[in-house]
Length: 168
Image (cartoon, rainbow, N blue to C red; front, side, top):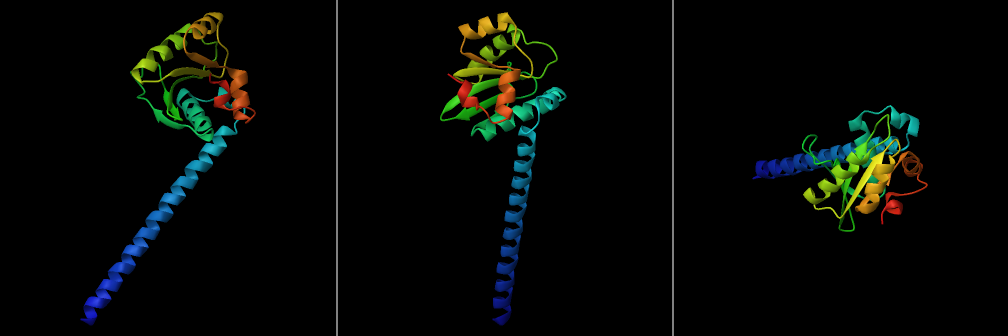
């Protein structure tokens, strides 16, 4: 009888220790990810220019999350021109990230516009570290697409504006 009680207490103790370790591990991983995102959003636009395309997508995702959006990444190939889907207040936004060394033409607007349907989004956004050509601006004005260029991106990164401030 005494042996059963001891075994029961020992089992309870072990389960509590395992649960505490699990909670600590989750909390540690969560804090580490939060610190990574915070460091990411504090980069200068010159540092952004040196990123790879995937790093730029992670950077934009961190900015979106900082502004209260939930994000979903799309497959790296066959994404229909959408790199991220941002969700806030039941609005789904298709986002294409373009970290380039030249200005972005209308192809990016066409792609994100097509991807809006695929991902059931009401709005499309193209975000770049450069500028947009006149054709891209013209096409975006006739579609439901928002363009965020270098200067707007720098304002987002510095917390002097938010993604919401650029959406219609």
